[in-house]
Image (spheres, helix red, strand yellow):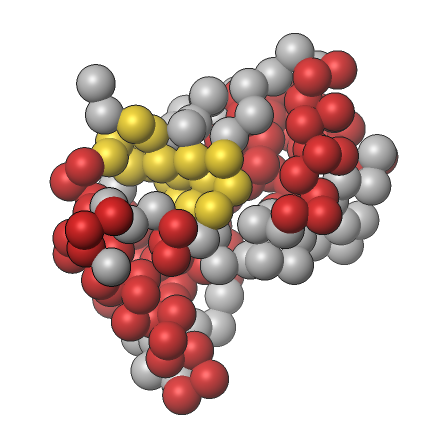
Length: 157
């Protein structure tokens, strides 16, 4: 059985980005998708699709086309309730509620990995313990929150 990966908005949005400042992330995202995606069961959510639709991204049409081919996790009202607990407990930003929703989806659906380039709010080692405490209180699974850089097979780096 393949491990599961939840993609937040940064993964598809960086995939086709040509800005020089994001070039290393874009290249690693492309390489990960080219070499690793078949090793995992990949998912995203309506939140991811909505953020992509609403955002101002270079190559937006290509990003949305890519994202529309990924399996979408069904919405459940528990997702918003979980996200609110993250916000109320200062696990996630009061302003950027999408990050809390991504974490809620990955936790609720027991995704093995939440794949992101958001190292400020999600893939942040300083937040890991706080997230684990809240997920334990909520009796939720704790996904590994990682960047594509740490999810390559060893021989492919």
